[in-house]
Length: 78
Image 1 (cartoon, rainbow, N blue to C red):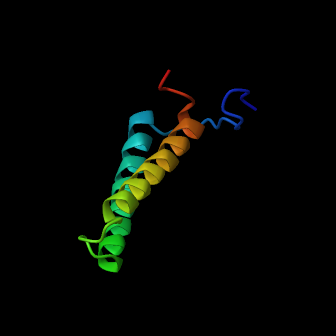
Image 2: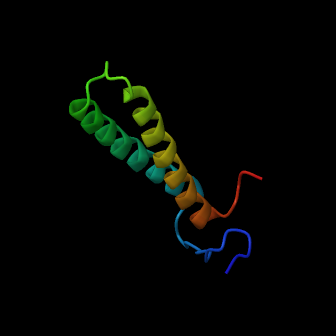
Image 3: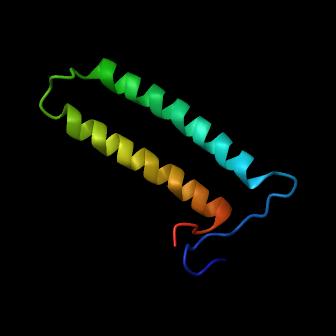
């Protein structure tokens, strides 16, 4: 177990790191688009809290994706 990330690192043999990152990015974009579309259909864009809800959704989704990348590749942001 990695002490800093408190996760178990996984070695993926036979896969190119760039290909894995591209796949994750593509899936992230797809699910993000679907989620935003559903959010926009559920709420009126002129609603007072719409922009705040959208920002929270985007921030949390991107944090989740970043955590997946961290689990697979380790902490590459440092």
